Image (cartoon, rainbow, N blue to C red):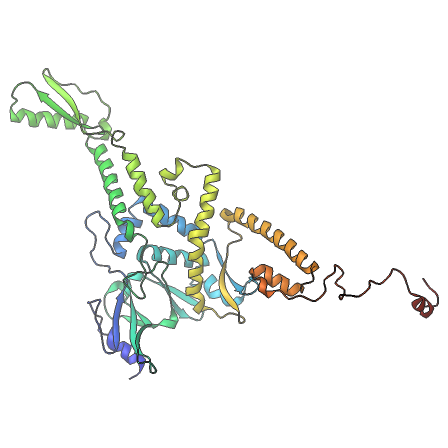
Length: 441
């Protein structure tokens, strides 16, 4: 039986059980289910909930995702020589520079990082030689087959393609693995091939932040002040209590009636019930949750614009935080994207890889200045090594790569690079040379 026939036996009809296995298959690896997983206003562990309740419904989550989105789309694709680290462009990069009509590299990278943030997986399908499309991650199933090594008889699983169902229901369409770029920045420990969203470990923090926002809203909706306890010395008719409550709600309830003077009849004693925001350190609790969300997304709080970061912000702090954000969070993301998309381009020569260029990103100009200072120091090292007699071509390769084993000595040790034991030529012409030139000096 052909491989495609074995795959078709698995993906048609479309199974509802994520552990479904077919003939010769290891089963489907589901990304995130798109069913009704939300519980009220709480965030659930699925792509739809992460999108609607987290990304679209929570300020700190959106701020962190947006910081990642803004920076990743600033890079451009280049080829990099693995030995010299030289960056250069080529016409074969066109499919990544214009992935779809009116699409740019920034659009492609932005779609991929948002899907990876919310689903843990980003899928890009090659429609044709010069056209790509984004696949919604919760409509994709990873198809893997179990194979047996003929020499050792050991079995192993390998991805052979992806089953994509437009709309999430119906008969899927199968795409071979060579036509789909699958990017998983954070691996899921419970899956061989699937990624995990960075929101998963901080789902409780997101729910706590949503609860505090709802609490704040209720505070303003109900009174915009702490709750009041009104006591009378004698027994009060229940109907009067209901009437008094309605009167107070009408004249003092809601944000439009905040800070009005409360006037009651004789014998009423008013006492505040509950704590003020200041008394229970409400802002500190909320800031702590926001910092944990930012840390999970790899974004410093000051870069995301969260209050906890802004309270201690200075220009120096911001520059250092942004540099750390680019180095520790974004550089691995850029490298991972290049590795995933490299199947869609053909390198012009061996020893060349798909890479990213960040030299024109305004926010990283300080890093570029540091790089130029490093280049100046490298040029001094090159000059010293050449003067010491090393072959100039090997000197450049060794200094750029940081591998000093690439150095090759010419055997010439003096500044003039004369062979050892030779005598420097005196100034002017020798007597024989003068005779040969007619006595000219």
